[in-house]
Length: 581
Image (cartoon, rainbow, N blue to C red; front, side, top):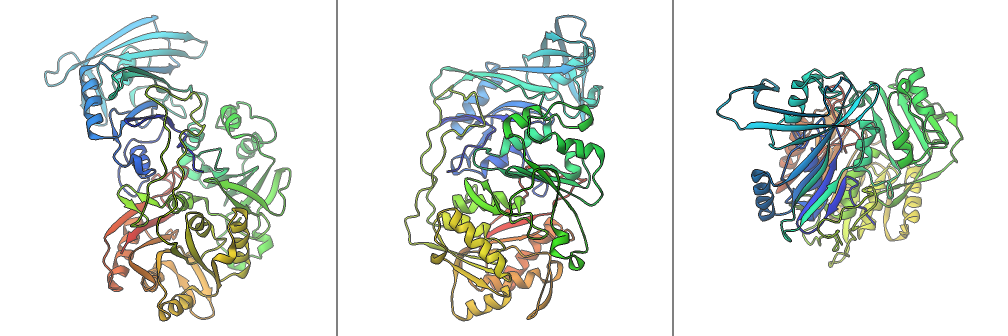
């Protein structure tokens, strides 16, 4: 059972109301930089494929947004915003004195470079007005309510700065540097487009939650997924350091030895809900209350010389708390997967492929791109009625159930299957799966993952050996599949074919895979080769399709999931593209 996206506060047949975390843009600046909130929602559920944003919110701010599900609803909501009948309230924090409990700012806002400035005259734009009211005063900060009567970009931010109290974290307008912009769209009221009744929504208080953790809370269904990334290197302000939550344990990874502040951050997750600590960086009080504490912490040095490392040397080592059993189970999208810290460098599941595994599980790749031609949308959900917002948005609402495919079983070939994570999701979605891997040990691990999820491994194929050899043998037999997955390691060596390097050999691997893909079948091609940039990877896959004599009829580039944020300082490592050919 797949749960509702945690950031969704309310859904009915007309609208979606979402609590956007700070730091997540509404729209991706390019297809290679990760999905914006709107793209992520559109590609997640078939019923959200036509979502449109009725209003906007700065990337740096958090809070309420309303999305329409149809052009008619979007037109109605847009008209309400234009008539100023929508009421939206913001709250902000400033560390500078606010001279009066009630203040009003009025000006014309004009764009200058990457910011806006107030002017006394600007005929081409509407005069902006914002009312401010102090809610609470504390020794080091003041909580202020802001109610704009117009809707200009950066309006609340500019007017707060004009009145002498720029928002905490808003360095663009003179505010003190902070981990986030302390501005939240806190309350939203509008007339429901289908009933005409006024509906009201209230955001959660998220100022005490570190924005890096709030992002995870917003996208990971914690009831059905217990394995995800908490810290992703430079994108989360910790260059070279990566931390994963794996059920009741944390896995830390870094090239350099752990520093005292990193050890203190890890220590706070143990046993009891964490306490606030400025020295430790993120404030974990709210996060630990939502996610729960861990039993132990493991650490693994990131190594470039794996070929010279024994499996025992490559294993993560316990550094804090209690040891994990030899094998333990985590949840991902409601499915169970076995992990281990004692089997070498990898623990058994690559978390950055979570959303791609979900695409197999739901048989839905992206808006307008079902996995199968005979795709049936997810079973009818039971969204809340107009205005009935959940007070606990991390609880699943209207969980979609997957309808059995009306045709005979579809087929999937998973090359480089490892522990068969993709295979389990496809089998759970009704596929007959063939999994290929060079390692017999990992295929046995994959069989156990099948059994954990109530799947009979005897109903599926597990082929041990070189992938290219198997692809040629299957092609000679005329065996073809509805879906083929190609996700090889960046570097490997086999007796039959010698060294494989993704940078130079990926194209011929795709060509071989296309020989066993049915016409109008779907190929998932993925790589984490750092030397291959996303545009070059897509071009490489397209060229391989042409060389194989296949025509691409649909293509979707799927970036890393949001808990692996992409930034200039931390470029994308995983590149994945889905093609119908």
